[in-house]
Length: 278
Image 1 (tube, rainbow, N blue to C red):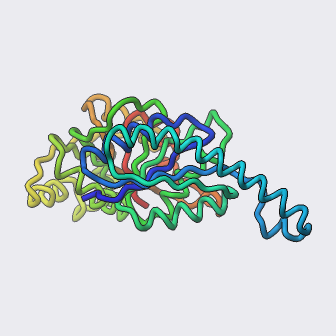
Image 2 (cartoon, one colour):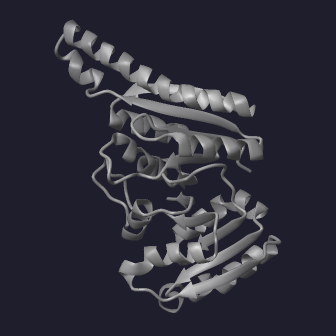
């Protein structure tokens, strides 16, 4: 069960989707939420200390302003969380993007679930990089909410994107609290005959979930590699899904490594909340 949730509140992008989504989910699950916002500082204290006390003082002023920006973002969350009556705590940070990503990754490892906003390629902001960093560093499930998301989060109809891989299996297990409460579960496969090993087939997954008392349907389609992501989103729309569950492929951008093709395309064109595990 998700009882301890971390949510990243953007300071340079719209925050309403993650505020509404995280608070509604916490209220439904009777869970605690740790909300973190980051005001970004331009340089690290280690670098600035080389310039002497005067430069260090400038950095401290910059960091304080960064914390103020984080506190302003969290004030919106705090008001909504208090009104909803959930358990919560707010954590404003002032840090460089690299330091902030490390801190958030460390925090995420101690939470049952992390909630982040879908990156927006049309905007230039470090808030776009943070969600991917949490995915790679958390060691657990990360719920991406589309920047078009509006209202309360629900997960009555869930699609499991299944390719038989370790990451898909990890995501499926990490989504167990959602799956146990779902009204319908659809196993989505693309090119199963060519791509999924027999022992990890969708039929075997359906039997496995059936032993948990979960009823599933299997929907499979063929698609060229470049069309896998739009095919998944098309299936999600056809099935009226509330949530997709899938493995998150790739490596940290801040460490000069990158998202896998389908994962990157999904984050760029996401239309439905998606739980990923890496």
